[in-house]
Length: 509
Image 1 (cartoon, rainbow, N blue to C red):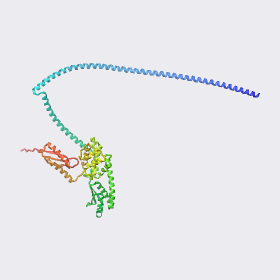
Image 2: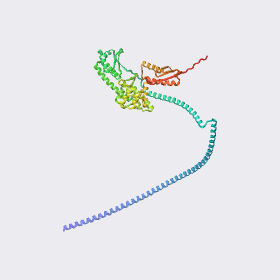
Image 3: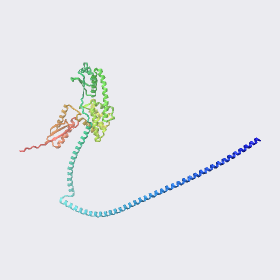
């Protein structure tokens, strides 16, 4: 029974618990529903408020847009009204102008009629006057025309000849002035020092006793030295000095350096001589290469072959009339470049031609031919351009000058060689050259006297006035100039002046 009661109690407890749970759940559900409905009402209220706000803003924006559109329309109507007024005014102006033009055309038509009538009257009068002139002059119109043309042609020819002479004189003056300006500018910009070098080398000695050691026993030292270097050693009465002479400047430089080392060292014997000659030759070769590269760099001529660089360096030890050919080549390149720049020619071609124009002198004692042709052949062999080759070959007029740069190189060469102090010549050579100038002038008929002036730069010739007239004097000056060009070698140019003087003498008694 107790068990039964316990089970019944348990069942009643469970039933009561389930009923309480149902009641609790039902109460909670109602609360959640109420809260959801309140939230829904709140959201609906907010949505309605937002919709009202959007509608108000849309109405305001539409109102503003409508107001702006109305303002723009008013402005456009005002612009159209002004444009309409302007067009109306322009149309009125055009109408008035058209009326004025119409009136002017009527006046012109009337004036043209009067002019036509006047032209007909003048034509009739001209025909009458022409017929009267032909009757009086007893010449037809064509005959008078030919006569007039002949007179005008003769006068025109005279005027033309006079004008041509004036133009020629003006051209010569302007050309001379321009040439002087360009040459002066080039010389002033170079402003290199004057050179004065010789073809022999003198080696100073500490004492005259050193001469005996240089000669050696039975002359073996001096013979070994001359055989190793290929030069002549002159041991004379000159105190404390020996002279080294050779036609080859490289050999002479090697011998000079070797002799200086021997004198400084004091040990002079054949084996020592051979060793120092070999060392000096290497030094000179190095100097030749460095001087060649320096010449190309200073002249602004890149890309030269290594053999041409060596030949340029050999010019360091080559002279002409006392002028160092290495410095002369660099100076000529600078002058040629400046003249080319002034004249609008190719500066690089002119510089290269000026630098290489005397390159043949580096080997002219080894190869037959003129130095210009030798230099041109060498340049062509090592890939130098044809315009530069022509400048090298033609700078002494041995071949035709095909380019303006060739003429510039010739002028630059003459400027560098002819400037004061650039070259020197012996007194005998100078006297022979001046005398040859005077003798050439005296060979021509009609020459009375000739005088060489300005160190042989000018020759003045007095002619016999009864044998040489003005035209003959001009021909004589040209002939003497050509004879000088064909028979003489000289730097720069020589001015030939013909003087024809006529004197009238009478006595009052």
